[in-house]
Amino acid sequence: MILAQQEPPWFRWSWVFDHLDDIWARTQEHIALTAIAVGLGLVISLVLSAVAIRFRRSYTPITWVAGVMYTIPSLALFALLVPVTGLTTLTAEIGLVSYTLLILIRNIVAGIDGVPAEVKEAAIGMGYTRRRMFFEIELPLALPVIVAGIRIAAVTIVGLVTVTALIGQGGLGFFILRGLNSFFNTQIVVGTVLSVALAVTIDLALVLAERALTPWAQRRAST
Amino acid sequence: MGAAAGVDLMEFLADVADWFLTADNWSGGDGILSRTFEHIRLSAFSVALAALVAIPPALWLGHTGRGGFLAVSIVNIGRAVPSFAIVALALPFTIELAQAGILSSGLGFAPTFLALFALAIPPIFTNTYTGVREVDRGMIEAGRGMGLTERQILTQIELPVAAPLMLAATRVAAVQVVATATLGALVAWGGLGRYIIDGFAQQDNVEVMAGAILVAGLSIATELAFVAVERLTVPEGIRRSAADQVAGAKAV
Image (cartoon, rainbow over the protein chains, first blue to last red):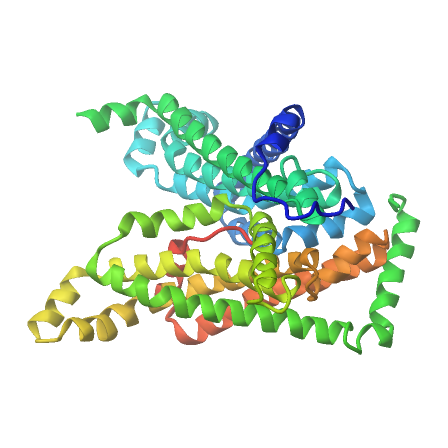
């Protein structure tokens, strides 16, 4: 542990300028941890949602299990995994992915449930198969609700990634932890501000992506 | 030490079971019982104080319809700022206050309490505001027509109608606070997080696992306790819609 400098000022720009490379590397690590978690979480959630929609009875047990995982504090979940998978990225990702599931599954199912029945009937009338209808009709129309879920999941995961610093990962959380241990505020502030900025940036990027993917919603809004 | 092989894992779990069966681990100032109690006490205190501070302005703003943007943003801000960062940021503040002689110690209780209190405010504030805002306008007009004062409209119509959502919000806040209290161990507070943090520091996986089980158990118990209260006090249909509507952040 590095001991505190005497009377450290609240924020030292000199530290920031001296550590730009380090900060950039940790930011990239943070983005990678988040992207993998949300990406994998989305794939798993789509599969589980498809199961829940096809077999209605499975919805309650699926969300129940996802809900229990969601309730377990991240530090405890990582701690439960460390004896098995060690202080690794795998441990971090298992925990992070499991936190996306409840948010994503709920939104995917709610979004697809919200597709108007007459649209689906029209698709069936036009000879769409169940699978084609899911990918070409239901999924695109549910996109706004699904993206809303992805946004919440992404912002949540950006925050939770900081906790993985305690198991030797952490991206920007690394600075928060080191600042905490050495009573060096600058590092805490850098870690926090960049983590919040990252969450806001990713959130905005997802809004823009949604607009690009749902041009029909735009047209409706402008008329 | 990763206990990857099945046999090692079984042995490891037996060690964890042994840990729980050791009487010494349960008693005393740093035993399971006193740490659990400490964890619950600080969490309850933080949520109660946050409710006390957040509910009156949220009710008033909801009643007048002012400050809508603030009320909606505050929960999003709460979601974007990592709880871990809130705990870390609380520490320099309390140390500063201790140096100024306002607090006797800047470590332990003070930063943990400050962080938990700050965390519990957004969900309670936002959902109370939303709950009051979304009361059926017709009901309020009817109340006004019957000659109720603004105060009576607030206490006799808006508050009871918003109550289920407020209760759901308190559940979200409480679960989040219980989870984040675990991080108090990083700023020299006690609670159940101590087992995990100390276990990490001493590379004692048995203690880490035991702490994880205790923390996970307490979080789930908190959730279930609130669900039970909601079941007893809120009719099913309203409970469902409150659960769907409640806005909050993932417990860290």
